[in-house]
Length: 222
Image 1: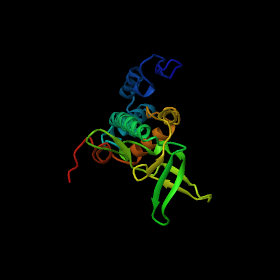
Image 2 (image 1 turned 120 degrees about the vertical axis):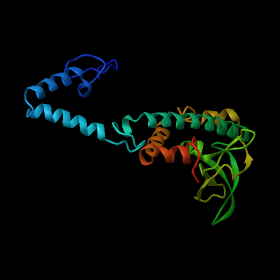
Image 3 (image 1 turned 30 degrees about the horizontal axis):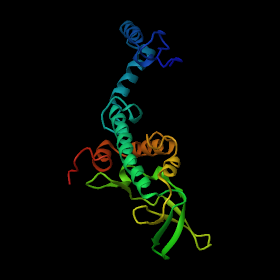
């Protein structure tokens, strides 16, 4: 690929295709095969073409490409980003409305220690996505994941991971400070952690699973 993003063939040096799709190379190999059916270079060329055409994509199960070049995976990658953007906009509105961020005083409850009071010392923003945000009938999105790192105010060194949904806010921070704490690219879902998460999901799962159980763009058969 040249500096301006245009594909250039290494065989004929023309733009718009690569060596594997070069029509001149195909024509040349066909002539060699017609002249000598045992020409090893020509036979190897066409055998390679056959193997490529039979290759099955692990994502959509169609032949002729792989996960990396799958157009269906590209559609679902865009779907992930769009759903995340919508969910995160709603979640951020809720955070600002409630005044939750670093410095917020909250009461929380843990399984082992019961109730406690602490200050939010960090927010794991990357853990908040479309799959972990509950949106009610009024369109309010509440994060349902333990994304708050809370330090107890009793002087101990205890830290707890707390879900905003289960925390009771005792002391808020201004909404402008909440917005200032949001990492760059988080709201647009193009931050590194989010993109890594999306790529991992697309790599580990099939199209049917992603669309039915994660993106929920298709109905489950059950």
